Length: 242
Length: 189
Image 1 (tube, rainbow over the protein chains, first blue to last red):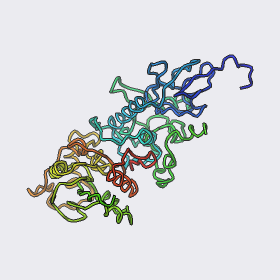
Image 2 (image 1 turned 180 degrees about the horizontal axis):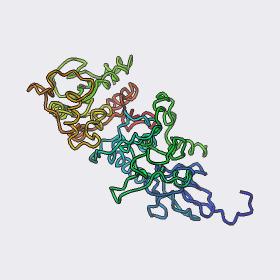
Image 3 (image 1 turned 180 degrees about the vertical axis):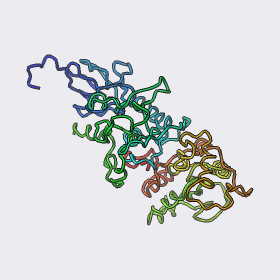
């Protein structure tokens, strides 16, 4: 910014828009600063990048890469909102809906849910081609202030990183492999861990869906005033470019 | 434009709560405008139980939870050129689909019926039986979205969908101008 490190700055393009970056920045970090929104679910401001949900997939130099982990390169030409990528992202989000039990009309996260908001943004409105897996998953209401409805978990791991890196606790972790990989708590159930309602991992912004529930606060905000009632997800970033 | 023949529209409520039909009434005074473009055939709104002729548009509320729902849905697909799933129950099963995945249960339908009629704390069912009158349609093992039973042409999301999105979509379909929804109109709740 001051000009002393000008030699490390460079530019590249996203969908033809010139974007500034410095060495070590990921494509998504540079895009966010420039006001270009790249859809994402497992990435969250303030948490280390993981690159697992693949919703932020872009084409860089003809290759599909996760924008949240791929470093930007000088002169690179990145494709973001092409029909092909939008369709692929929509399919990914749709499969997340089908993999768990996502019943928006009964969910207290509805209107504040990033998965739902992503489906709105990506226009997930056509008749589905995928089967609903409808797994039987557990509800953990053992903790006095927190409940976990794992039917809604999309395994993004944001709570894992928030608990480890920000809270310094390790309440959550991954178990299993492949399609059986799930987020689990470090104990028999949540009441056996040192989780507290004031943890960053439990805060509303970290869980993108309605899996981590703070008891006695649900449905407080009326329809019409919830986070994504006001605009599509990502509009705050896109407004920077205006 | 006034020379256009009126389109025939049929509607039905399957495993739904009739909220989506109430939402059709949320179109309010624009219903007058809409009724200039359509005639309503088989529908709870006209109380006609059978198709009187082939329809241009069929509107389905609710998913399929029993064999009668499947029968009606097949009847609509046979008799309608364009079939619209209206609301979350028709689109993905909605609230009735909660019975598909009950925690720790290998037989969710059995558990659902037992709690509703036999073991539930607040029930007064003196016969201690699950209703089994032969006149009752057989329940399906699961609640199915309409698109898993027949081909669905369009889906109008919402629980219930707003009067605006219903009116907007129908008007655009009737005038051949439907190109998808505006992003800020899509709601799953």
